[in-house]
Image: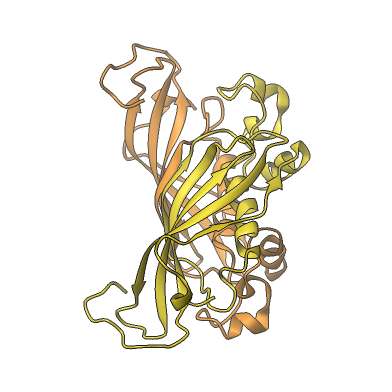
Length: 155
Length: 155
């Protein structure tokens, strides 16, 4: 997909992915070895009352499903950043997650006529349709038909 | 460490960690399989001009080093979220990263007398002392000496 293929209000939904206890512990041992992510006994005494997935694991694992939807294929050139990332609910072993992405803004580049910026709101939901994590991010997308850059618009 | 052990202005520095090409590709195949993270040839034709690490990889790998500093040992109870996350510069194979964390705000909980909130500014730097990624996050920390909650203060 390319910049021109997105419209404000478009919604994309990923496949679902389930986190096992083994996967939660394996990820956390490499990247986030806090007791409530790697040790059932310590986790039961934490504020979470049991083992929970690292927030980085929730984000990374569901991002793979986002890429697999194909929305970045062809035109996707990565992201400059994320805002308002909130880990709203714990993710526990056996939880099944999917992501709903909504296009909230579209801007062409002020300086590069070959690209535009797609702002997306990300909601990661569990099997009870509860939002466990949310964030907004800008994705850099190539334009199918490079036009004029827009003086005065952001980067 | 506990809530009382932090002061605004405190700076913590992690050990350094180097990203190999194999590690960059392995992480991205699992969590962020975009061409410029997994395929040298496609990456050379992207805006990045060569293979770069997934932003999730940069965040996760350096977070392990943050945990290993011990600043969350004892009192750390995770984070409700992150703001103003910016991937400022690409991270390439062979780059060596470390993190500098600065305490920017301290608040006790309005409703839970056993905890407080430590706001930290995170700067991930490469071997040239360039900031490659930055973000701010709140960490929930247990209080060593639970006091009164503060009516009117946030959460």
